[in-house]
Length: 271
Image (tube, rainbow, N blue to C red; front, side, top):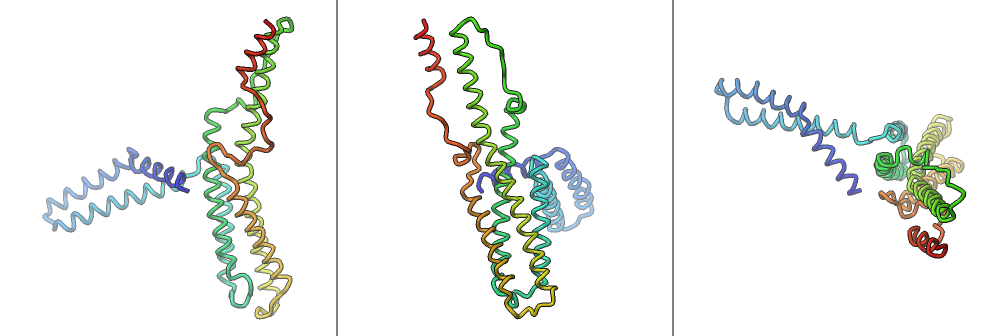
């Protein structure tokens, strides 16, 4: 979470020091404070307006930084969809008397806890995707290729090692992006789980059943939803979305020797 806070602070100061916003705030101070001083208004009033202008500048900068926290539109769309489901879920829960529906008094807290974890995971996945796209754009889709000559044995061996390096590059690239894909999949599971929860609660509330009676089917559905939320939360904890994740690799890497030393040994043997 500290890495996300550092990125947010950097983005806030970038917006706060934007030339256009600084110019407007300075112009407001100049064109209003000047006449106020000439009119002989009390100093506390002048200072109060100055502080209000600075606070407004900070608030506008903060709001602008919030809108730009997600770099890629795909992840912003994921979070917007998740936030919309949370709002709808809260609206439904406000109409339900929790004391009449046993077993769901902790459900809203669990839902919001998982949502906060998903927000952090989506932010990290967004940053990873941006970092990878800056350097690897186009390389993964079209890796280098060549037609090695069939005459020189040493050249053929070097080309074989180069092809092996390409395969290893693709393997590590897929490992890094697997964390991003899993985060998006967890978001999809969370959204559909909240949708199902909302409709089940509405159905139980509006079906005419006496709210003071415990419905075993309803409680079983709530328990299943809790298990799904717990599974999402546990998966997010196990998924370490660092710039180079440790627990993402789909399969363990094969034991290998350094490519340069392998090429040197092969060339020495053939020479």
